[in-house]
Image 1 (tube, rainbow over the protein chains, first blue to last red):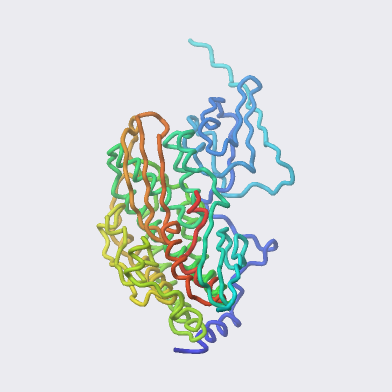
Image 2 (cartoon, chains in turn blue, red):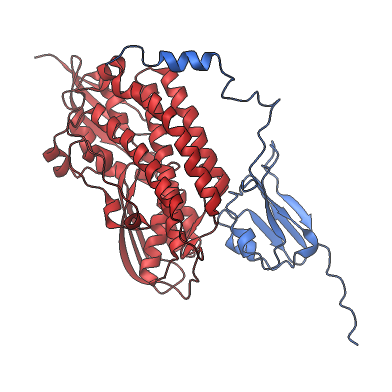
Length: 121
Length: 359
């Protein structure tokens, strides 16, 4: 039974660097595996819409006629499922979190039309 | 006879971030009876199972709880795998056990911190959570998330961890162990802590069994019941035995959890020493048809999962009995006759997770 069990820990931490960082002046580097936000390589997207169907949070909208791929960053739960199911691997998980925002907008991307196939022969 | 008064406790109370309401019937300073009511954060997650594909539902299952999220996802996957008779690779099972035990360490450190906060020991609370950060870092480095991991899927896991990294994590925990011991000595030996926890909320083994207690609350009364004995995941390959105490009071529950932290570190060490090689997931052909009960040991106690499928992409029925739900009757029993000032400490010793309970 003791009374001052914490004293040693407290004295040690008194003369130690703070356990916390001086955020926002010092930002922790994310781990490479961190699920931060979804990125898209627009050139590779074929607008198949599998990511939209599979997204558990219904954060992705794919509109084939207008060639638009859009993501609602505030709905996205960064589960990585769209990245797993994407057939062309055009979606990637970036370790950086999405930037803070004050509006509930979706972030649209325009998918360029596929390059014409070279003529046979 | 003194006058009886009803004092409402919760759903918003400084000691609990989660909403449970207790009507405390008090005579002078003694609680005579406690009437619990839940239902403030019911989200209907069980019902959602008939709207989502059975492969997608694992993301919802993980979100049932923010602390034992890994075990929730794993239990759902085990249920689906058992219905479909999937040959889950050994490596996936080993990594699942690793993550489940890391979750136990982080959950118990979180609880110890909250406990210190509940009896007003702020510096102890901060230091406990400082140590927990390192455990969360392991989670983030391996799964990509600190709270929700999304690494389990029916048939295996989504991300691999190299054997070398596993040994690194075992070393991180080895280095962390002396620091955890130092903090835990305060919980075990400090007179201030004992003053708040020893002899408070005593529950006998007979009462605990009769009321259907689970987890550390049951083991603190001397009953060595732990669902890891059912050898799901990779628990058959590691040596461990349930931590028990016999006093049945708040201090005993605290000591059981402290012992489980060391035990979890030891299990991680064992897994890192003999990681099986091979694939991390198997193919999931077709759809499930049948029903299954899974019992898993979460940090808070035994969780029961039931699924029923009829061969469609959606499951027909999904039911979860979470550990906190099983421990609420024990809490009500333990509250009878305690001091009003001890109610927050006592309510916290069952490690209540109300969002689990209400799903």
